[in-house]
Image (cartoon, rainbow, N blue to C red; front, side):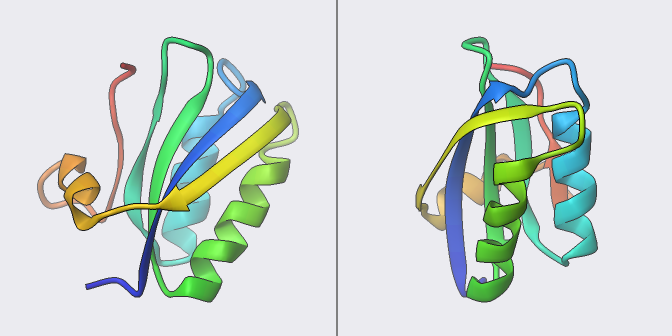
Length: 99
């Protein structure tokens, strides 16, 4: 069981700029579990699970994002393990379809 699970919503110019792929790559390089997806409202949603300090470091990265993104806000809240079940079976970190 991870030390913490956070549900994160990122708003701004975060679609069409490689933000999801950047989150997936960065989270995996940090050893985090979870998933990322676009939302129809133009935001990006992610669930990040792992050691508290690493999850907080990833949330700080999300405030900057990839070079082509323009992040306006990042909202993070505690989440339950049930949200991790949305991952693709067998994957530690998944890129999910837009909802």
